[in-house]
Image 1 (cartoon, rainbow, N blue to C red):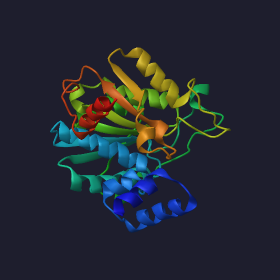
Image 2 (image 1 turned 180 degrees about the vertical axis):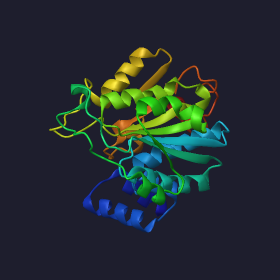
Image 3 (image 1 turned 90 degrees about the horizontal axis):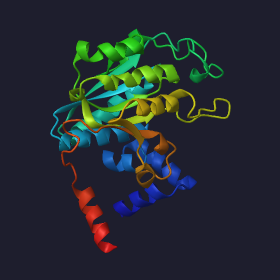
Image 4 (image 1 turned 135 degrees about the horizontal axis):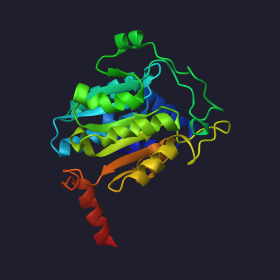
Length: 279
């Protein structure tokens, strides 16, 4: 009965099912992986990236990993990430660090049309860093211009390898600078990093496109790097077919990472073999 219910909730979206998901989320029914699988958690896209990264870290026998959020604003994303991390650390033998990058002053002036000045104003999403620090249980704020903090972060903090990154900087120029984080030594990353880009999609006033914003920053990064690529996670619609965020999950691949070719397959790859045999 339990598995049948979870299957139905994961594959259909009538109003009654939506209501059931809300109830499951509110009461925290079932296990965390089961709730995550049907989207019955707050910000399932955050949970997905952190959980999958932690599973990869565990399979590679990394004792610790880090999660990064670029663009924290009022801090709701960091607070949510803390709840996911608390659940995931109970399930996997991986300790998880959390860092939030922000300038605390809100959006800077746009550089040009690529930063959407028709949609955003300077000073939006200002942070009260003192108030936020009092709410945070584990996250550490990294405050300043991302063009500088993305360069100094590793030398000043020496974090555990990064496994998940959430991008919510709105601008092309800021995202471009944030992606320079990947210029650091590969020891600071898992060989594949789960990424969520908040500003890939937008409304009919904003109108994001591949010619501006985060999409442009991703495309330029890929053109500039031969063996480091940021690619759409094409398996997402099969796992979360009715979720709005599935086409905003990307994977950073460092094909020269010392652990990139370490075998981490298990039940998934065995299942793939079985499907091949049935053809």
